[in-house]
Length: 325
Image (cartoon, rainbow, N blue to C red; front, side):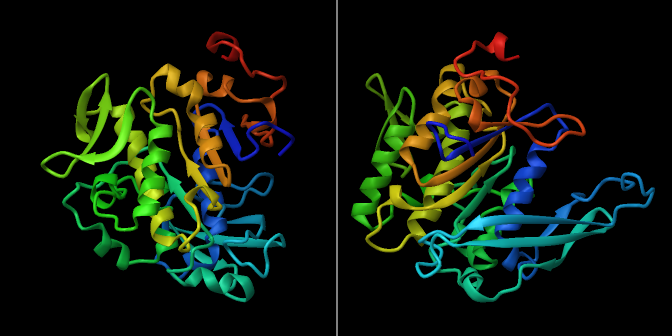
């Protein structure tokens, strides 16, 4: 990415149907490719062009490739080195299946260890929702590959996230719990968060002296806390002991980051996330001119019909919504 003040942020911008969500899925698949073919991964109609350009032949497969720089959390001995990942999927009716992928050798062997703290990739689709607080999420997580589970929200509309209310009140690491409470308090707009619960065990937020249980918040706040709570769960449970949460490296993919957010929050949400978690690489999609106008030119990649993904034609940082549109 060219130089930008928010160096850990990429925003994909484009009209409906231009492939923003597909790019997020492609990134998620590539970065977890060594384990996906063994994790029971299936995707609905990703390979969906009827005919290949200029050939007139049906498209039966697609390949996703990514060049990556290995982080210290992934492998201390390989940190800073570059490598490639790939994944091939084939059409199987409407459900596509992985037929070839990065082999499990060298540095990628650790990706098969569920308790390994590295290779952190999380994806959140537009229908992201949290499971009921009473549901035992731990049982579900034991039933599949953890790296596959972390991106399933991008591919499965009904896949529920881990609710903050289920794990934070009983989380035993006091030092890390304090870090999470402070971080959440910084991320919230208009509300204060101190990690307190009511008599039923539900988390409480405060606004103008009123104590409001999390389920009583508006859709925007609950949607935001939903994916943030799931994200922080994975940070807490798989980060090496003694390491601060803000120092964790990884990739987080969020489709339509502006979903249900009011205008002021749309203008500030990305910068707040970027600065609060500076070592996380955030990749977002959005339709919102308010979100777009809050970012500098190098942070934005525009998707147009039958053209490569490209930077905007001109800077739009600080423009009004009408000017951006």
